[in-house]
Amino acid sequence: MKLREIAHSRTGDKGNISNISVIAYDQAQYKLIEKYVTAERVKEFFSDMVQGKVVRYTLPNIGALNFVMYDALSGGVTRTLSLDIHGKSFSSALLNMEIPNKL
Amino acid sequence: MKKILIGSGAGYSGDRIEPAVELAEKGNINYLVFECLAERTIAIAQQAKLNDPTAGYDALLADRFNAVLKICHENKIKIITNMGAANPVAGAKKIKEIAKALGISGLKIAAVGGDDVFEAVKTGNYTLMETGEPLANIKDKLVSANAYLGAEPIVEALKNGADVVITGRVADPALFIAPAIYEFGWSMDDWNMLGKATLFGHLLECAGQITGGYFADPGYKDVAGLARLGFPIAEVQEDGSFVITKVPGSGGQVKLANCQEQMVYEIHDPKNYFTPDVVADFSDVTMTEVGENRVQVKGGAGKPKTDTLKASIGYKDSFIGEGQISYAGPGAAARGQLALDIVAERLKLSGVDYQEIKFDLIGVNALHGAKLSAGYEPYEVRARVAARTKNRREAVRIGNEVETLYTNGPAGGAGIVKSAREVVAMVSVLVPRSLINYSIQYEVL
Image 1 (cartoon, each protein chain N blue to C red):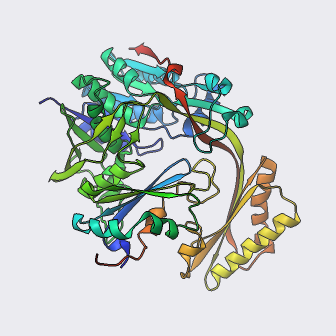
Image 2 (cartoon, rainbow over the protein chains, first blue to last red; image 1 turned 120 degrees about the vertical axis):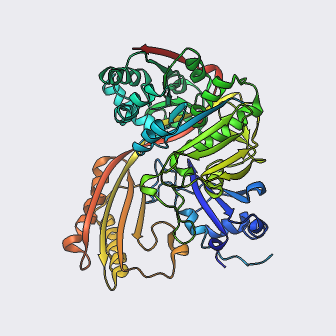
Image 3 (cartoon, helix red, strand yellow; image 1 turned 90 degrees about the vertical axis):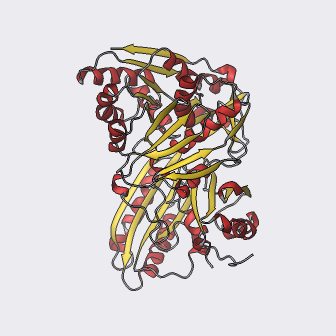
């Protein structure tokens, strides 16, 4: 299934770093996203766009993952040539990721 | 237990005006905070101030204060904002002028300065946080340097009876935590309390982003009333716990999912969220819906602040030239791609000097590149060429080459837009706290 079916997401930026959250709609689904939406998979998913490393932080209390993607915004909001200067649309890409529907 | 209500009146410089009026009229709030200062805004404001010493504050300052000042004064609501940008003193004088015109008397306005570290940074030995390169490399192109101040000067201004506090560069959460520190007498080294405070500051600082803005996704996350979105209120208790809510009847929603998305927004490591006042830890936070449009937030902790402050440096980086043209109907994407190929060849033939270039098909691959975009055929596309150049003359030539597609390019090219602009870019350095001597100037009416 698509990640979109069980999780929502929001993207922010700091300089040339993109920060994407993935949050389970239902806390019971957190284990599923924790298992399948790994830093490695996210790095591979955005391989076209993210040049640097991807670090994942976990917030099990609110059922959330937080991905910090380095060298991800072609120089960052103040100088990039990209149409999406903040990378704000990245969350919509990530929700299109395919994940298994059980642990 | 004592409780204060803090409203968030703007999440960025161009934000809507009426939600703050609604908060002031119907929110029962004690403080109204406007966060209006993006990273680059201050660099541009600095340039405006160089041309005119009475300029350099936020462009919408007059509109916002004209809309809320009278009602805030009547309802005894104090206003805190970073709309001072590069010139808080001039901003304070403008607010005084507005107050006078509105017939307000008995108003004390505090202008917080001291964030400008341009002279010290220009001559000092600093390393850019983004690249690890020495700041000296861009020394001749610098236009501004502003350190992120903490809550202390705002707390001092409130203690001295300020009704309005206007600052330049201050960490966004500091604008919101200052009133709580002042009202509850929290100590500036009570790290856990400052960590909790930073949590509500962080949740409020983007205004509508916690009440349903930047959230709706029809069929998955439906939000009603986005055209009249209500801005958030934090009802803060003396123990640092708080409820996020909004004015009853306003648009949007305050539910768990909204608050969770905003809590994680741009924080990087949830255990180490760096601010000038504290290193906040959001890892143990819990949220509970306790009523309609009411979310109770508990937890949050903190560790001692660091010895350094982040400073934002503005510098003249380059120019960007751009042109766009649309194609529609059968074969739109193929004609758009042909247009891009033609421009690429033309730029080579005519010898345009650029350092970096991007060719996009908007509607096909502009946002996420070829790999993630594969397999979709659009009805219409917009071809876009953007390039970085060393001067305006070359930047203009980029858009011009796109424009010639009207009569020289593929069939049916439409709706050309072109532009050329100078880029003031931002980088950061860490500066010692000892560099900062903040100042507060008062205007009384």
